[in-house]
Length: 119
Image (cartoon, rainbow, N blue to C red; front, side):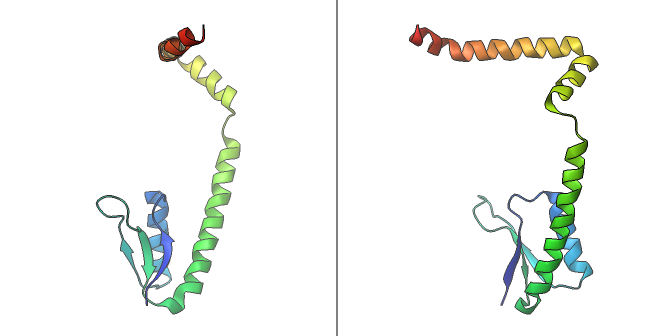
């Protein structure tokens, strides 16, 4: 009997491809289902042999643990929010200021009907 081993809903294409490759490298026979036309079905990777579930689950959990560590390492190297803003400003100050003005104008136009109700 088939058993769902990995849900593809919400997984990036890169992660899905790496899990497929991992299963193939370890000779685990699986098939893939899509979410369907309206995206309401279960998109996933299914094992044909339920007896391989434990082995496949261990491989996927090990892979996801390594992926988590890579992401945490990458995230730790990213600049903070304020440093990101400063870099954006210093790279293109005129575009940064014009974008900020445009965002403030949109915010004012969006909120002005509600501000008149309060006053």
